[in-house]
Length: 73
Image (cartoon, rainbow, N blue to C red; front, side, top):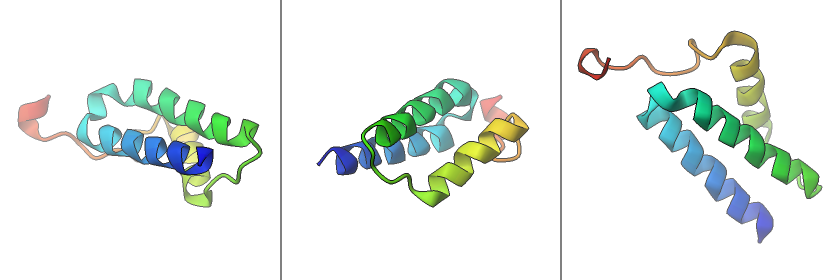
């Protein structure tokens, strides 16, 4: 049950990142915390999320996030 609940929370964070790219640094930290919770529970980390976290770490994430529309800047 803990795995499924954390997985749902992670996907909710990913949805928020897509909807609110201006808040991405806060949301990135939340994503890291959830992945850490999975790891601390001894649960498997989804490979796609591990890759995403690595991409976010190494590139300040600008290339990972969608560009905001002109009226959102």
